[in-house]
Amino acid sequence: MELEKFMEIREQFCLKYPEVTEGKMMSSPAIHYNKKVFAFFSRKQKMVFRFGKDYPLDKLTVEVSEFNPFKKKKPLAGWFEVDYKYHDNWENLAHLALKTIQTL
Image 1 (cartoon, rainbow, N blue to C red):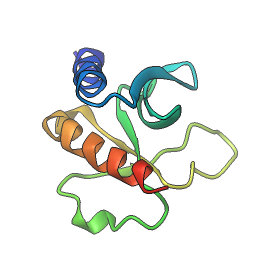
Image 2 (image 1 turned 180 degrees about the vertical axis):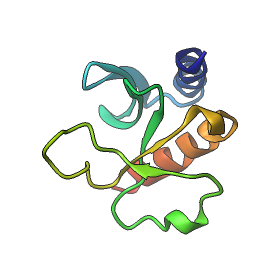
Image 3 (image 1 turned 90 degrees about the horizontal axis):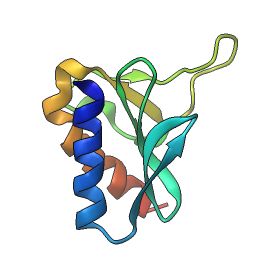
């Protein structure tokens, strides 16, 4: 169910934006903009977004947590994961992540 929702979003983005393509991040399905990942589906069944280090997280209407795939390292700076219970917001969050990466 979670993966299906991610795949649906990825397909929509690839059809709508010529610069957006399918790809991988840490062996997981991802969404790329000009070959740079801005969102992917984690092994924890959550969608992960690149908002950047300075994004005002308090403006988001969902609960996010820092993405940390490591056991003994710090979280990936600027990457945040969102649980499936907020899947209705995943598409909007993907748009925010896309806007963020377009400005880098």
